[in-house]
Length: 223
Image (cartoon, rainbow, N blue to C red; front, side, top):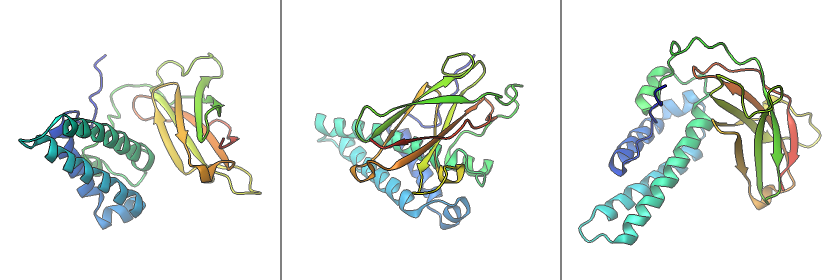
């Protein structure tokens, strides 16, 4: 099987070109409104991209030193992580996102004909680990086969969110979405969020984007 090409380039120059195109399109008021994006989140990502741009200029200068090149490498790693998180959280499952949007943003357009696999029929169990302060690590386990995921499953979507006091947990509270092809996802929180109740729910996704049913919502307090 041919490994799917990552939509985010790895070379410093190509990464910067991709990021500038991505944030320019994403910053359009029409796009923000149509996709229901948070202006503050977009602005924060733009600020981080600008910082990477400045780091590239310093690292490419004739008088650049090892410190400048190290700073560029660190900022590249961080912005790749931030951009991927933004895509997975706010765009990947955004029903308003069109294939033309994906093309303009430099994202992968799902190939609905690549495999004939049917949508997953099972859901993953979540085993939360709260042994680290301000962190919840969610490990996934297939309830029937006792593995991270059954055959022909590409990865797991994790929905999470704060549960208001006195309310019964439901999907409407789980507004944050994360995706991983691995057996776990780690969620980080702040000191102010310690002790707050978090709802967690997961489902499988196959290679063509077909989604299985959500499993039951479990709750855990931020350690």
